[in-house]
Image (cartoon, rainbow, N blue to C red):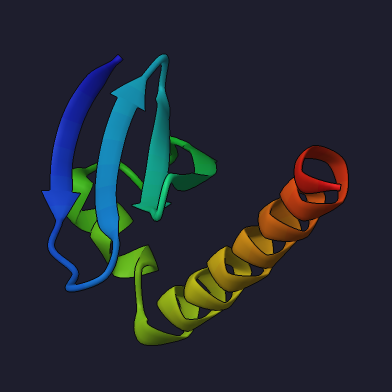
Length: 83
């Protein structure tokens, strides 16, 4: 696996990895991670192609998902560790 590039963002760390004819789009925030995998094909062949996937709608959904993940993590911690 090699790093194909990083996409700048003020809140998230976004890294694009390439391995075995597949791109892996990794988003990180607050000790949480989301990973999306895409097969290379005729329409998705370069880092620049992967960058096109990361539009405002996609990022909004990812940030919302991070919020939900953080809530679930906190609730589980409170319920199972602090209780």
